[in-house]
Amino acid sequence: MDKESSHSLNTETKILQAAEKEFFEKGYAGARTASIAEAAGVTHAMLHYYFRTKDKLFERIVSEKINMLGDIVLSGIGDSELPLEDRIRQGVERHFDFISAHRDLPKFIVNEVLARPEHIEMMRQNARHIVNSLVDNLQREIDDYAAQGLCRRVDARMLLIDIISLNVFPFMAAPIVSGAIGDSYGSYEEFLVMRKKENLETILNKLKIR
Amino acid sequence: MDKESSHSLNTETKILQAAEKEFFEKGYAGARTASIAEAAGVTHAMLHYYFRTKDKLFERIVSEKINMLGDIVLSGIGDSELPLEDRIRQGVERHFDFISAHRDLPKFIVNEVLARPEHIEMMRQNARHIVNSLVDNLQREIDDYAAQGLCRRVDARMLLIDIISLNVFPFMAAPIVSGAIGDSYGSYEEFLVMRKKENLETILNKLKIR
DNA sequence: GATTTGATTAACAAACTTGTTAATGCGAAG
DNA sequence: CTTCGCATTAACAAGTTTGTTAATCAAATC
Image (cartoon, rainbow over all chains, first blue to last red; front, side, top):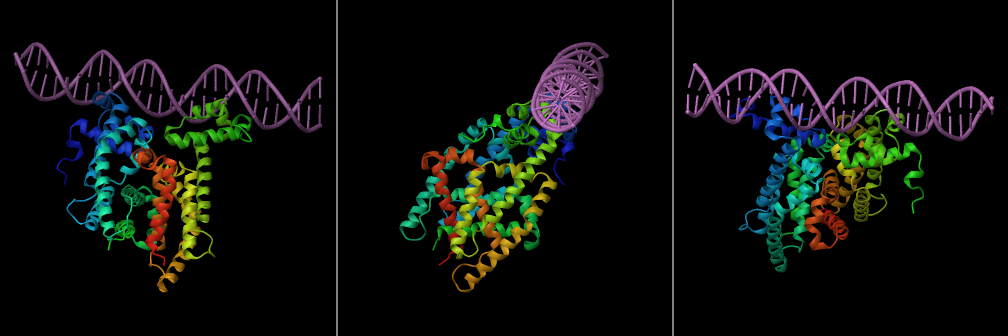
């Protein structure tokens, strides 16, 4: 049982939780403050009391999610003391698992965050240094391996985009993928397990680590 | 110069064009019928005169776009008389070029189509047979090659998802990708040219055609 | 026990959005 | 020339949505 089921939380938290759900499901334009208040089990005046406007409430959720993205990038390409192959494996798997644990996040980011220039700028400032150092680091290691003939010389930035592309898509397109694929692979969850392995293999194959 | 700039088209067409733009940019919930009418240069009563409701106008756009998807799947995995490698190459490139020519389509499909069960069903019925025969066909060919030791035995359905994932993502995430990558690869358009090659290579590498 | 302070409610108001309608224009058919 | 039918317009109506406010409640403080 949850430590706190939603009715025992304070009003502000209840509104935040309900708002996140509503904004994720319907987007900013489709979300209704009255609907959020109802889901939170409070009058809709409370929503304005705590957050003034729909917009400020939305911004609150957006900042929180943008910060989450920082985290995943950090844990992104695994522990730096591992050999390249293990590190890539760990990075890909962690990334896949993170998306899997937050399945509606990519859609939210693409739809609601990337559509607003201020938010893009926020994201960029939040992730720029982390991503840059991660890429530089990874590129150096790949180049080392490649110089010894142990792997192909691939562009680290491209590799990162490969990983994100492969991991994110099955979740964003879940409604079609799950239906179109259901009969061949059993349940969607079973498919995801296979897909995770598949993505890892695709990436390692591209590197051709020997 | 365009054969017909928008003011010379008939009212119905002008509304349809403005509606597509509005729905693509803002989604169903965010779109305003008055805004569509204004962009089309007609009174907003005309919109209701021709299409009755916002919903019916939206459905019109959605059907059109779902049909476009059928086309791309058809041209998807190239001419069947080509050898496997060339066929895959042609398929991947055509797919990439199609998405490139309709950059906002993936977002629209994910946000506005996949969010509605009726539309998912529409898409499925539209594409099911085409996709199935394409996959069966491709799988047979891959298995042939693999039996002769000419390539790895990969799952055709997974390969298809790989291709779509890799090709679609750079466009859906364009706002971050273009910014985060700009300095390393020149313009975003230059990046796309490289990305297309990269994706093809990733796919062919996975197949390891010899 | 009275008072103060923050939380909560119900009612309301303003703005916006979709959709309708009655009147008008205008070209083609008779 | 008139009439008929379709296209178009302006005005309006109903419903929805966000946000405010004045009154009330409850708990802590004096």
